[in-house]
Image (cartoon, rainbow, N blue to C red; front, side):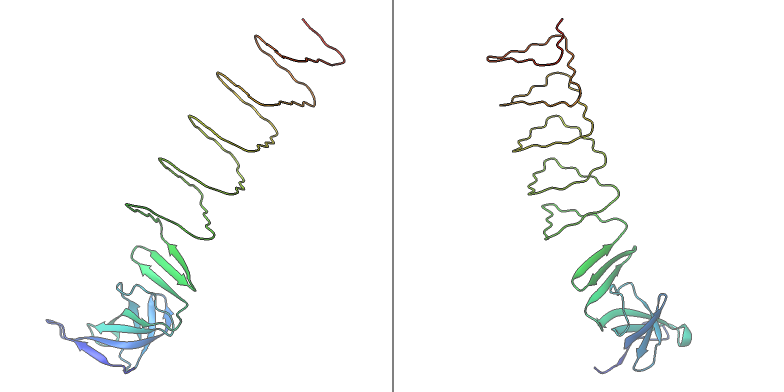
Length: 224
């Protein structure tokens, strides 16, 4: 590739604007050190129009204009060819950056908001989410999960109505407390209760009805 210097005349200015090809050789802060074939510029700033962050070995297009000598303003306006195609950094105004590396994409921003008039779909073999605070609001939600493993610290739920159909339910708790204002009804084919220490039942009225056999067995039975 032949390195050429293209002067662009600007009306009303004494010095012309020049475009030249260069190679990035290093960086110090916001300045990029470049090597141009015509030696017209040795360092430059990244222009806002150049969204991809230049790296060492990249071929760039440098624009120089204004005053001559050490005070000449030089900017990298475009990245022409990358020395390594494995990754790139796309810098946007406001501190937003997109990092691409070997097929991976990372977005850095203070806040990310997605809006779609139709639908937003995510598909991946594995999806991970991590945060300090989370909030979800849906008018209706349908979920289909084959297996769930959850570790929860404190759970608080409020619902107007809950209906569940379970093939087998196994629960284990250290302490269990229930407050039911109106009716607590259990319908089962067979009920078995096993208490290690003491079973205490307090009610205003108690009715025990059986069509077959009723058995009360104990070392001591008090009635009345």
